[in-house]
Image (cartoon, rainbow, N blue to C red; front, side, top):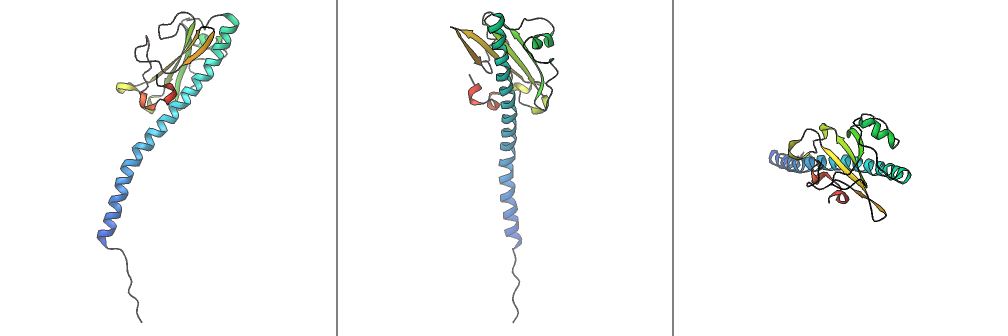
Length: 169
């Protein structure tokens, strides 16, 4: 007895390849967006850590880091390294200062994180995306404001679709 060898027809193979192509065309951009969101979240987490150091400085000296021209000196005042010491695959540079960028008085400080351009997370095709956060002292309490609104004096330029929900204000 001979058994017939069966296989897939050319049409069946082409349909399977077409289905895989459609699935890949949907999955790859979604994965890319997911990776960018994760990297921006890393920068947000870093800015929250920095806000704690700024809060400690305020509690000791009743002020936020002085807005001197040397950005690295500002960082040193809260115990962090120079502006270029935090160059990673996510962050290009970081610095802090007083007088938050939302137009608040001297009872606020700002944290500026410049994202690496390879991430391509900026609005309007900006080469570098800025994540600007503010630490504010109001009514006897500290508040961390992440990713200031676009009406800020010096707004963040990270596309809101990449920001965590807690950072979209």
